[in-house]
Structures are given as C-alpha cells and as structure tokens.
Length: 248
Ligand SMILES: Nc1ncnc2c1ncn2[C@@H]1O[C@H](COP(=O)(O)OP(=O)(O)OP(=O)(O)O)[C@@H](O)[C@H]1O
Ligand SMILES: [Mg+2]
Image 1 (cartoon, rainbow, N blue to C red):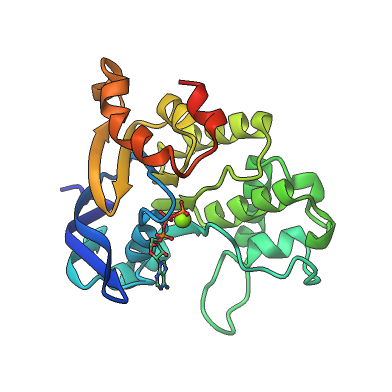
Image 2: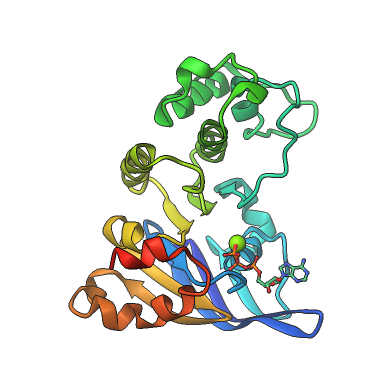
C-alpha cells in the first residue's frame, strides 16, 4: 500500500478569532508536483506550516506519510518564504547547505553528507561558489543556496514557499527543469503567484483563499483554463502584479 504524502481532513485554523483556513480537505500523493496559488493572506504559508507541524490546526486531522507531522520532519525539505537570516553572518555556501542535514546534537557529518552537499550545489548551479561567504552573494544566488539546503537530504516531500521570488527568468527555467527531475523521487509542493509558469510546469494545482477552491490535475483544467482559473485569477488579481495577469 502506498501512503499519501499529505492527507488533510477538515482542517480549520483561526488567528485571534479570525478564520484563516476553513475546512480544508487536501490530499497530496507520493509523486505529486503541485502548486498552491491564491491571494496574499490566503493562508498558503500557514498551510505549509501545518504540514510541517510548526502550527497545529484548531480542528481536523493532518497526516504526513501516515504520521503526525512532527514525526515526519525527517521526510520533509522546506524552503520558507522569507528566510530569517543575517546575510552578514560569516558562513560560506558549503556550510549553509550542510546545515540542512541534521543528525542530532553532537553528531558530526560524514563524507556522504559532504558529497550530498556538492550534488545539491551542482543541481542549483552554485558549486563554483561553494567557498564563497553568503554575504558576498546576490539575493537570487542566496535563494539558490537555500533551495540546495532544502533538497540536500533528498526529502520525500519538498515544500517551497515562493522559491522563484528574486530568481531571474533564465534560472527559473532551469529550476523548473531541476524540479521536474526531482519529482520522480519526491512529492513537491510549490507556492507561487506566477499562475502562467506553474500551469506549464506542475501536474496539479490548488487554489487557496481561506477555503480550497480547486485542487486537482492541471490537464483537467486545460479545456477551460479560464474557467477553472476564474477562481484564482479573480482572487489573485488583488495580490499580484498586473504584469503577470496580462500574460493570460
Ligand atoms: N502568527 C500569526 N498571527 C496572527 N495572524 C497571522 C499569523 N501568521 C499569519 N497570520 C495571518 O493569517 C493570514 C494568512 O497568512 P499566510 O502567511 O498564510 O498567507 P499567504 O497566503 O502565505 O500570503 P502571501 O501570498 O502574502 O505570502 C493572513 O491574514 C495573516 O495576516
Ligand atoms: Mg506566504
């Protein structure tokens, strides 16, 4: 029997009496490549944090590979939306990625860990910067290093919260190529505001604005993209630059 990567049943969450997520039912299968789209404040980052076990919903049930989210942390790689990180902190690229591997307190790193770091850096085309201090990288380069950090352990579920922010178009293309390589090995969930790009690259799409308005295969939406996107396009028009909407 194969386990779903994520199963959410009737999840609701309030912050200060305000409903943030309402009755969410979401299934992410083992090899899904899914984008979550929706307006600012729609609850996308909150949903990822629930999957990670960083937030506990008020009602409902979440299972990650059949386990409580906190007990499945080892199986997940996560790229937060804004990494709270002191860019002047004296750490180099290699050690930043290595820090994505954690064997427990006082346990060191093996040769295999170091090889995994190099491989992850190759994946994001940052190997040649491995000895560079983080403070001497551009924003987009730092983002690539954090993506390497999220994939270094080859997680079974990769959660990325707007990974393409501050990545140039050429690199975005090579990221989608990288993700399409990785998707054979893991489930990938990507939060994005770029509806055009995700509808080309991902297999499934979920539209979230407090409620889950749609979640399912992109192909099913092909016929009437506009129709299915009616929901998100209307919803996100408040939250994303018009430039993106004009492409439709
Ligand atoms: N710790 C918190 N305490 C109170 N309210 C919060 C907290 N975190 C988030 N919220 C609120 O929950 C709602 C959902 O926030 P969330 O960050 O999940 O949105 P999002 O869909 O990721 O938006 P964006 O596209 O801007 O990243 C927002 O209204 C936000 O103000
Ligand atoms: Mg967010």
